Image (cartoon, rainbow, N blue to C red; front, side):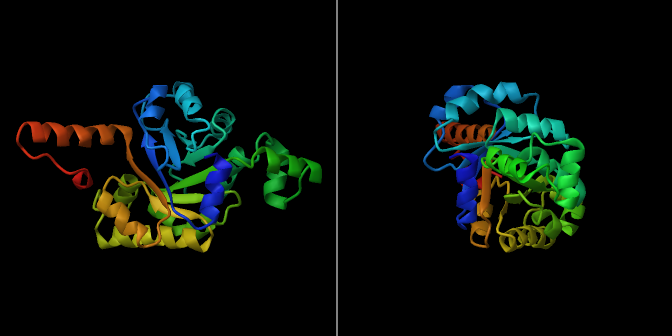
Length: 265
């Protein structure tokens, strides 16, 4: 699935499913993933030592597989976002967005590249482009790029509708650890305040024709939110899949029963 195909599936109202890749950059990982069940993977450059070039072999192995490769960038550098989209044209995940105007420029770095500087600023603030031909060119050049925003703070929740209204955004989803900390209830994902926050994200996304959801590490939580309108479902990561499978297998071998995968949080 290309970025454009991912966007079309989101636009159709269907849920999309994926996982985060934190640890394994080996291209043969593509042989182990359930490619017929995945819509996307998120290559995570934010919370580890890997950079864009480390993930390139895996992304090439996945190319043409039907799985879109999104890059979770490290922060709010427009140059980094443009570079990520140049190397991984399916799209980006932008973490910890809060300010609407700043986010508008981060999104434009992904889906209006290579326009920049005064020309881009005028396009964003006045809707004045160098020419109609230039705008059409940029639309076509960046048609494959999907942009997903991570909602991870109280301020982001306060600005949620405006963030969802930024042209070119396709999905918004919670970073549960950061969001719960910002709410003052660290990792309490069944706390009424957290449930209300995540429902707000899901509802806002659906109002704006986007996919909303959260990064889930519990099957029970993922199913619960699918029933409540969530449509962007990145589940677990490569390390947690390995951990849960190993705990189950060696727990059974040692006679301890192990834990079922949907119990791993």
